[in-house]
Amino acid sequence: MFYYFDELGSTIDEARDPHYVHGDVVVAAHQTAGRGQRGKRWSSRAGENLMFSVVLDTSFLRAGAQFAVLQTVALALIDMLADHGLDARVKWPNDIYIGDRKIVGVLIDHSLGADGMLARSGAGIGINVNQSEFEDWLPNPTSMALETGREFDLRRLLESFYGRLMMRFEALREGACGTCGGEGTAERAAVALQREYHEHLYHLGIEAHYALPDGTTFAGMIHGVAPTGELLLETSDGPRRFLFHEVSFVI
Image 1 (cartoon, helix red, strand yellow):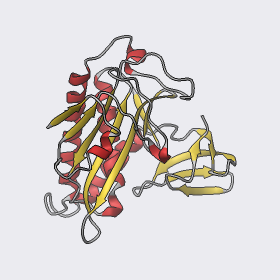
Image 2 (cartoon, rainbow, N blue to C red):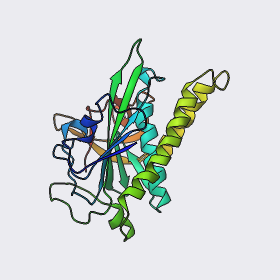
Image 3 (spheres, one colour):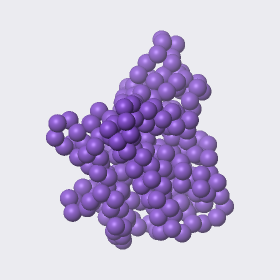
Image 4 (cartoon, rainbow, N blue to C red):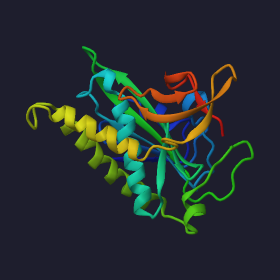
């Protein structure tokens, strides 16, 4: 079900309420406390963009496989944007880019169940749709309208993405059930998801500059992302692995 609000603090906080169940979508025309990764705030003009969270039953996934949820959401966004003629890439760990500009931000919120399994996940998503002017402090934003030269119906666009996400999520569920398709099904599904994610990975195989939390910068080349979510960089000191908060792109 789709739940529309004129204003919320944050859709992902609202979506934590247990009365929302798998497949429910919490949508806000305006967020007063929208959140991004690393505690950053999400800025969006009311009524011009999509800000929403989707509730997902992820109880079939072990906690160690949680990165597959983010991969699934990211690929569904890639699908939706491609439907409108936009060639998008996933900028690790959780942004969607058109060229070198950010068009979507994603934040995944997980709840743990028993025996090392997930219980449910909330996918908080902000899509720049019809906004044409952005605050100066945003480093490199773009929108679907800026990229295509046309405006979009927000509800129809959300429904289009929702259909893409549910198809992707059902494939994730079926793939994770190793007994559903015979021996090796889960492993093959994980490999296929990983391969498709890499096909759409921003800056794969391209040397760029990165920054550590202390401000130190260095050159590196992405050669992949581990199934657990670590960024795999080739540097002058050899291969290195970084978790979400341990390194960032220098824009």
